[in-house]
Image 1: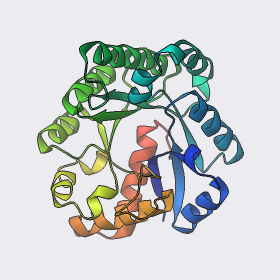
Image 2: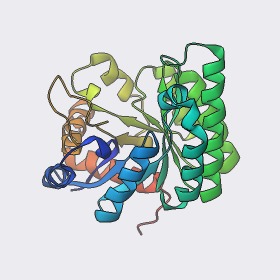
Image 3: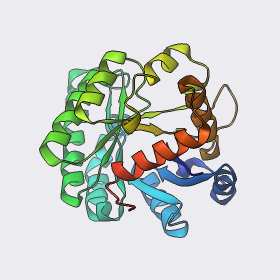
Image 4: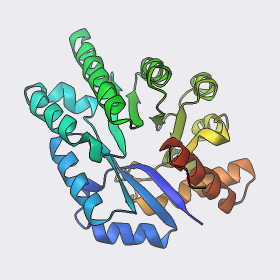
Length: 254
């Protein structure tokens, strides 16, 4: 059995080796380490170099960081452009209207997102998208990106709206479900709407689960929760979501 954590922040852990050993002990065979700023991109790249095969690399600038660090944007974008070919996915990128409350801030986030879409297209990599309080707007941009480039898009922790999930299903946009599915009834109902062929798993570690420490190995709890909801076996969820992950990455395993 193989599980995949498609979205976590390995750069935030002090003892990455220990964290990855815990993940492997929980049948996790792939961990996507996403980035949010220049420092985390460099750290995540170094982790992937040391643990290639287990760790997959996400490079990108988080929308919250974009608003809060405008003076550093040119150098961070230059670094991303120069190193993007080493990424497996461009992310974590997107919009965040909780952070961006002014029109100018939201326009800046969108402009930087479009630049990162162009980078993804240039290196032919899928994207991992953040969409806090901007789900509809981010999804519209994801759909346009996919139609324009033919590349895949993943809506990270995107379990607030059945209506938006149906658009994802129709447009072939992947959706990752996180630890909130364990105990949140609303999230559980939304998760059941996701096309099984577009379902991905994530932890968003180190974000805590029910106040307890989180790490990529806890993606197994996410998979177990979905299995219970679907009346499926854990093995079936693991196989389906792993297959989905490699298809998302456009990797042919046959």
